[in-house]
Length: 419
Picture 1 (cartoon, rainbow, N blue to C red):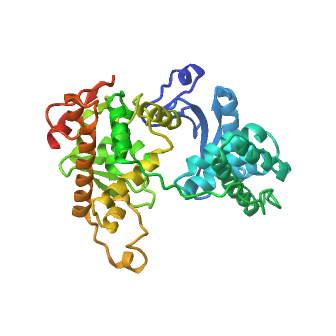
Picture 2: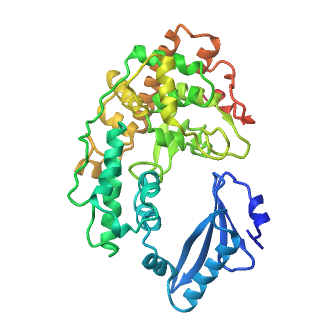
Picture 3: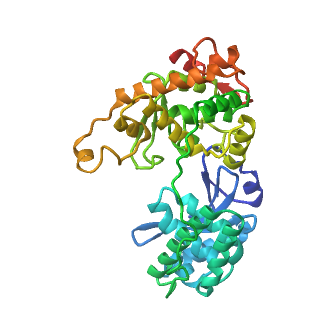
């Protein structure tokens, strides 16, 4: 899209399901990008040698349109003089905020699927305190103040994440010649982490399903689906309707969302299909779990605390539901290698040379395991004293269309028939 940008034009730009960019008709390469959250950010694109480059100029309205256009013209003049504006800015701007942005764009984003976590930690922990400081002036006590602060507020594991991402940031600065020494060098992680082994009992699963049945969308369906599919919270959060095949009763997690970088087919049991049948749909939105039609659900910390309170259970996280599902399938005598295929693990009983030669997908075995597990969940749901006809219809029955407790405009009743 191209138009003559004005302040009035930019103010009128509204967020859509996906981010989009509007290019300025008056300044070639100059544009404003509108994110799904509604943020408006100025960019300039240019070709340096054979490479197409893009440079962020700033966010509107903190940076005005005229200021952004001046910066874009200055960058294009540098290109005409044979100078890469990205290199010039990096050499001139040693502020922590600018260096963190370059680190995310040039290192974390291209190499790490969890780059958003790195961005979140740097912007929440490092930038607010030291964002306008020269990164070359940061010392070990400065870094320790961030890590010790996380430990003091009871976030010991978060302190480990801060340490890890800061170490990567400063090592990248060493490689680029921005720093001569890293303030994190020789600094150990503050906490020794222990692997969790929490598994919910049948009584706890029953209580949790009962609590979810009394809740509105989205957690009414989201939490039971975590149990039913045995997939990661982030993968289910990013689920799209286009990834679900009703004919094969299958959900395919795309490679860019899968932890091992490979597409993962998840068979959908009758229990899972009935949960999906209850879900509403926003018009023109492909996201399965959303409350605004633009972005997936979030706020999981408050959600899980609410689940603890209403179910009477405690000391579990959403990832523990994945472990609970795996343990439930193992208790039902599902072979370990089939469970690992359901979980999409690339290590375990089929690893090393065996993994190289054994390319069988165990699709039928995966479906049998999840159907068996789904039947068990349906049985536990029916044990609940809360259980009524509507509840049974959602959890484990295909009689009738499930009730929708949410406000979105459209839903797909086809799931009920497919189950």
